[in-house]
Image (tube, rainbow, N blue to C red; front, side, top):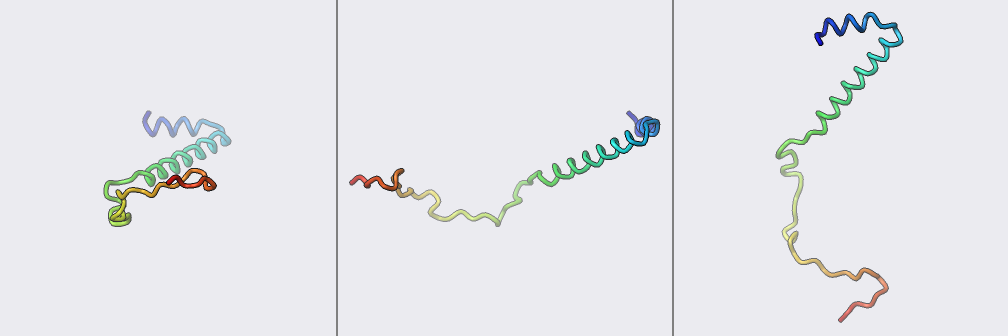
Length: 72
């Protein structure tokens, strides 16, 4: 639908429906802007995240129950 046709249809509507159309358009604009903000780009966090040298090191085993005696 062309913009002119859409504007003509909106102009025919009563004022309260024109207000609803306006509110809906504002909602769509805000939603679109939020989606643009949420998109991530490759390399966005480069230099912001550090992985420790011992990242792959074996973890110390911890008993599930803190009252359980460790097995020897």
